[in-house]
Image (cartoon, rainbow, N blue to C red; front, top):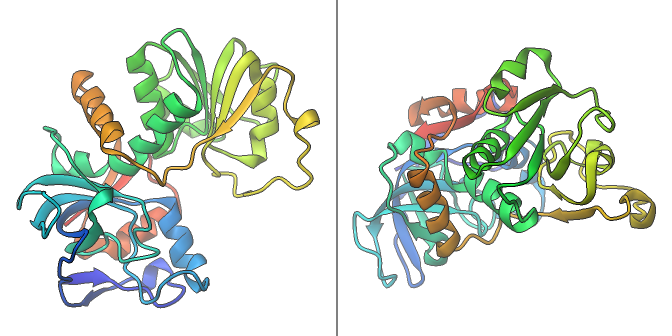
Length: 315
């Protein structure tokens, strides 16, 4: 089969397809014929930086999510040809991931899915919508009566969160730091140009999804009404930790700070997500799609950060 193999730091222009053996199914694992996968910021981090870490098994096939069909079910109880989604659990770091024509994956992180979405649209869902869903409902306990602030709305996760929240019935305020991207937030009730300081310029926010991260977190907390919740999920701002964090001074009185870590998907949640998508006739925002043969160009698009929506590769 064809696959992307990483042995060290690999800029997009050096990404290439190699010929490797199709892996064989084994107890507790299933072989998935990959039909498509979404691309993620964490894969860029792996390819450009994290690949040198001792805990990354090398050589490694990257990719933290995919959709496809069961090629060999082994002892899992799946049926050959069954439509599935797979994500997280160590994909593309602890074991080979989805940048390949076939992927050998732990059965516990492979989920049967019923959907009428095309393979391209289906591939845009697993990691992005799982993270949005968990952030909104587990991290924020989102209700139809809420006013939701999505800080960093013009990323794939932001678009998904806006879409879900609007379908639920919420009022949505979404931000971008680029003037030219304001029209891309047409799905929100209010699009706001983010200067880095929003406190005092937005009102009525009861829940806030922080996708810029540590860089704007303190300001987002100040934007939120007493009794409201802020969920920090993203790190688009490129700062990954708070130095000298003092929660007593940092978190305003009566405002709650949570986070969402997307490494523990379940069949129950995946069923809820696809049921919600189908029931509300949602269509994932695919910003660009590439054939697997053009994976180098797909990686360049990911690194360039100029695609509006999810980057999808069809295999």
